[in-house]
Image (cartoon, rainbow, N blue to C red):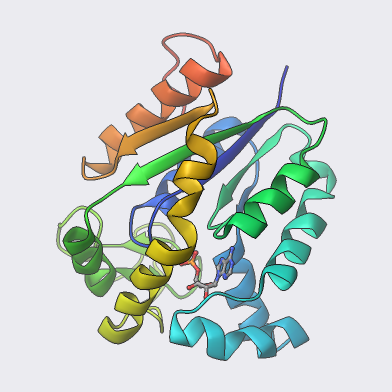
Length: 227
Ligand code: AMP
């Protein structure tokens, strides 16, 4: 069986994390979020964390060398043999080129771009909450009421320190300048698909499953990833 090597592209607030989590669970492969890894490093006070904190808080990008090193190390681990879901990496053309070099000889990357207009992204990012304990997202995405506690683990819901208006606008500017060019970088590949991210999360999940089956030749009619 071939590995599913999946890259989730899209602006902040597109729902990459939520969908990456579902797909990773359905396929039994790890979700690799460079944002989560950096936030963990900040919380643990490691050298990378100390270096990254101010940059993440301003909504800018951590240097390519640091992030490429993190991903290279993660992709060297055994649990990615059946595949992985990359969430938030690559974010620059240099990172995409480095990933192509890392993938040399491996199964091709499947790349999905989740498309959402900017006013909707701002609304989502300013209303979303995350669980302090398990990192799950609540509210924001579906426009529904935000629960008092995390639905998954009952943990306390907090706002991410970079989900405030000034930093959100900077992250969207950085996305347009640095990350959106990746759509062009990947779009000529037969394994690239665009998904309408304004649909309800379950519909986005189904569209992703269909797109992955199309390009990766998974079993037809599989409901994987919907749960
Ligand atoms: P995210 O959780 O994906 O929204 O990422 C949060 C923040 O972590 C970003 O705003 C960046 O400051 C940093 N970050 C995450 N992934 C990358 C990356 N691939 N390259 C550079 N910085 C990143």
